[in-house]
Length: 90
Image 1: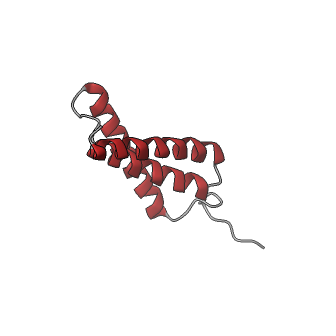
Image 2: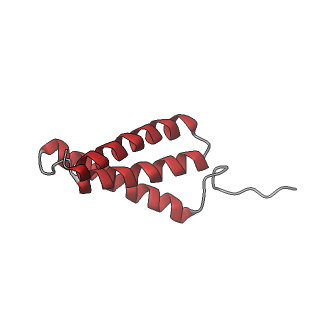
């Protein structure tokens, strides 16, 4: 007899799910604030975006969800490039 769990295969611990949802909320909030004109695309914007993308990419990989992992990874690279430009003053 095998034991079953309620978590999906490779889903990670519950705290990781909570952390990922929190990162998603921060990422979407900063993007909304940017779109609404309340936040300029500076260092804080790109750091928040990068943190969200890293968390989402890590959770997607843990769940073996390769398409979201690739998409979030690509957006993470874009956030790194934006962060570099923001730090350089460009």
